[in-house]
Image 1 (cartoon, rainbow, N blue to C red):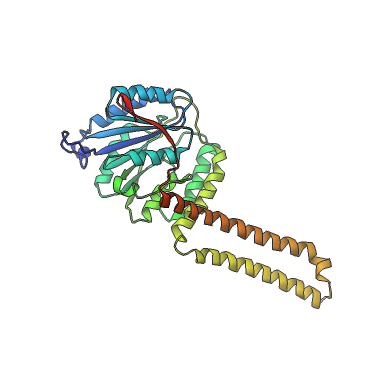
Image 2: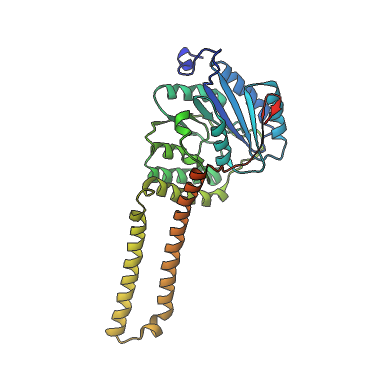
Length: 336
């Protein structure tokens, strides 16, 4: 390992301050955990820094939690957070961030498709002055139709809506400065939008290519069924980034569009009545009713959905309520 890769994180090992936290969401990855742990230790021990490894068991049913618990009992650097049920990746990352003590926080998947030996590159980039460093799975080998094409479309939309030039929002392998990520409240499925939310706070963001090998065990937990979730998240993030403090500009445009549409149809029906002498309710009654209903319903649903997102944000941030429920936390040979 090059000397410059030991950079920012190098401190006196006797100091109790943690330099690095590694957060790993885990859901039914019992086969990969031993090899993942071995690679992590090999990659991070060479940095010469104080670190901790936080595994977040997101309701696994295959014994992943028990496997990690054995690691925690033999390694004081390992912490296991166990959820009461499956809450999703956003909740798992939020729990890891809440418990993290390191000045730099690195996240990666537990399926061995994120290589722990890439971590030094991310830390070096943080040392260059960036607040967030995001991985870019530039060369992917998974299914084109089921994974790569939907991912390309989603990332293109995210770039356009967030105005952030990142190629791969969905790559879990990222590095964050603690003071930035601790200021971001996560809920829903917003974990992939952390760079966009951080950029709105003035964070400096970089992206570097990473390797993305095929899964050695098991099957991917992601698929086309997540498309609808991503679409709604895109609407949410656009609203949060652009219109949260000025909602009238958003709702005003919708209202203007609806008004102009209704006004135009009304003029059309009035002309039909007074110029051609056709009775409105006989000729256009069902159409007029359908038009009014569609406008009112669509406007109401969109408004309620976006207002609901704002209320959820106020609820979670104002009350301090978490989006997850922890059953226990294991560190060393004890739980709490």
